[in-house]
Image 1 (cartoon, rainbow, N blue to C red):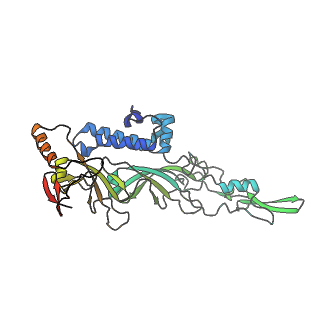
Image 2: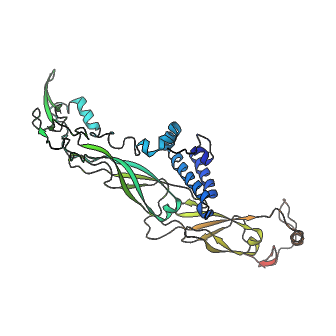
Length: 394
């Protein structure tokens, strides 16, 4: 496999870093390499792909544990096998493990009174599967479709699920008469107790084959890698799960299939922070823009837009763009808002002319003291002293 950089080095975090530290590091790298912030920069694009791959592994506790133990080989889908380690069957085929069958084998299928074990030939629903996908912030907001690879148990295509080699057929078990169960009578101090247990000759199937299928070793089912197309709705949030009906392990004896549960992980955005269906973003303006007002170009999920900054805006003020946030999940087109937190940048260096103008303005303001407001007559009603002269009181 091609050489890859250590995922911890890619994000710039130490080994053993926690979830919050990994998320914070990803946001910093995303701001540095995101294609929207580096248009046309192929190197930044490649770095962003590398950062995304590292975050996809280190943000998943199971993948992170495998990576910490085995390195890149532990998270390589071609080597790790993909899917859940208990993905609904054993490698190479065979029947699913059934706890009920194990319980019955210990207790003979029932206690006293002629109790009988559950019918092993009854239809059984297939087990559910669990998978995980990592999507971009914008994909979560707009919705997307992802192809998810799963390892699931399906009927053997070589023998059609019968377990018998091609060209042969199953035979009815003579020991149990095709019922899959045998009656057992036991003499006890309390009398004779009759119970049922699984037929050892046919393993409870009622039928057997003298020439089992080579592919499934007579089990009739194999573990197969399949691709499922999953529709991810607009507005989904990090940590939510999508249930895809009927895409889990296939059932036995005509039983229905299980479901596929897809856990969705959403990468953090380089600019926005999500709060429900609202978005928050910090906007830095110059002190003169805050004082005089200005028209700002601000980001949204749909591209940049213009927003008016009112004169006299104070640091920490919040401007709201209605209906520009995350679509409400199954909300009929409704969307949250974008909230812009205003940060005012004070210049560290100013020219002589600017200093002179500021000194003149400072002289017009009454002196302030930590002991409280200055003494003297109040301002005229309806007016106040502004930074650049009088203005209407808010």
